Length: 431
Image (cartoon, rainbow, N blue to C red; front, side, top):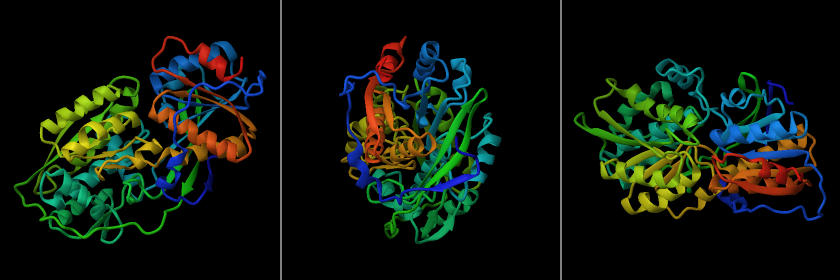
C-alpha cells in the first residue's frame, strides 16, 4: 500500500491520440499454458450496481486474502463496501482526480449547494465541461453548435486573461464582451488538443475500507506542449440573450449512484451565474438510464428542444453512440465529464466532441504501475464490463502490463446487472 503523502510523477503525457491504439475489443481467453495458476492481481472494470453482486460473489467464494484486486473509476463508490458487506481491504483503484487551480473553490461550492458529503468522482470534470460550454456560447453570441464548437478552445486554451471557477461571473462577462480569456478549471487547466482531449491529467490511487474509499496517492501526467487557441470570431452577447445548455447524465441504471452527483455538478455553473450576469442560462436534463440506446433518445430530445451543446454523456458507449447518431448530423457540441474510452479520441465527430477527463489509455498505465511497483505482481487477469469502456480500459492495462514484463493469464468479459458472476470470477482466477 502507498502512503497518503506520496505524489509520484509518471510518464510524460504524449497526447491521447498517440495512445489510442491501445483500445480494442477482447473476449474471454484461455490460459495458453493450460495451468490453474491464480494471478497475483485481478483487475476489475465495472459499474456500481453490477459491482455489488460481483464482489458479493467473490467474497462468498474466495474471502479476503486470495488475490489483490484493482478497480477503476467506474467502481469508485463510497457505498460499495457497505452494499457488498465487506470492508474490501484487498481492493485498490485508480481514477482521474481534480488538480485544477479552482478545485478547492469548486468542492466547497458543490458541497454547500447540494446534499453530498464530498464532491465525488467526475464532478469537477462536469463543472468544467458546463463552464466552458457556457463561456463559448457567450463569446459566440448565439445558440449555434458550430459557433460554440469554434469557441471551445478560444475560452479554454492558453493565450487570454486567466479566470478560475471562483471568477466564473467575471469570465462570463469578459466572454460576452468578446475578450480573449483562458478558463483554468477545477479538474485541470482544461486545455483541449486537436482531438478535443485534455492535455494534462492527474490520477488518484485509492483504497477501500468499511466507510468507503480513501485517496492514498496521486500520479501526474504533464502537459503535452503547445495547444491551439483560435482567435475569437463571435459577436459576443448582449443582455437580452438566453444561453441554452443540455445536461445528459445517467440518473438511473448501473451508473445512477454516480451520475446524479455528476448531473448536479454540471448544473452548478448555471446556478453560480444566476443573477450575476446580464444573460440568462437555460438548462435541461436528460437521463441516459446508463444505456447507449436511452442516451441517444434523450440526446435527440435535447436537440429537438433547441439545446446546441450538451454536458454528457457519462458512459463511453453512450457518448460514442450519441456522437455517431445525434451530434454530428445536428451540429451539436458535447463535452463529456466522464467518458474515458480511448476510442473517443479517434471518433469521426467533425470536432463536435470534447471531454474533460483523460483517456483510459493513460489509466491502463497507471494500473500497471500500481501492479508492478506497489503490489509486486508478475501475473494478472482482467474481469471487465463488456462495453466500449470496459473493453478498451482492460486492453490498455494488458498492453502496459505486458510491456513491463508481466504475464496476463485471463481476460474475461461480463454483462451488466446479472444475478451471478461466479462463473466469470472462477474463469478469471483459473479456478
